[in-house]
Image 1 (cartoon, rainbow, N blue to C red):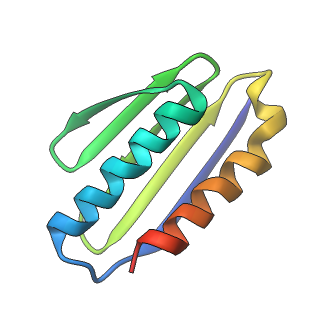
Image 2: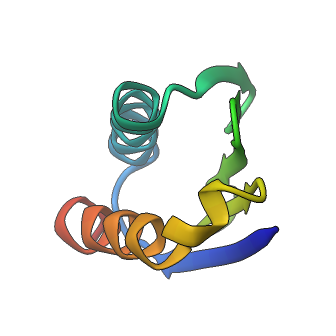
Image 3: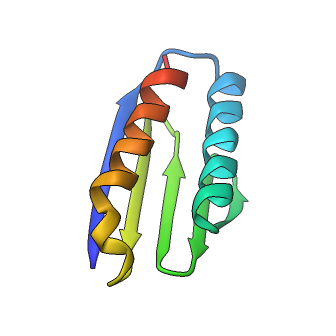
Length: 91
C-alpha cells in the first residue's frame, strides 16, 4: 500500500481556498473515481483502491492519500498530479 501527504501554505481568502479544494476533489473524483464527502473545511474521498482527505484549516492545505495494493503502483503519478494542481491553483 502506498501512502503520502502533500502540504502547501496559502494566503488566499477562505472562500477561494474552499473553491480550489472543491475543484481538486471534483478533479480526483473524475480521474480516479473517488466520491467526495464534505465535513466543514475538510473533504474525505473514498473509491476503489484510493482514499484521501483534503483539509485547509489554518494557513495550510493538506492532502493525504492512501492507495490500495494495485493503485500504489501509480503513487508517483498521483502525487505529482496533486502537487501540480496545488502549485497551479493555490497561492
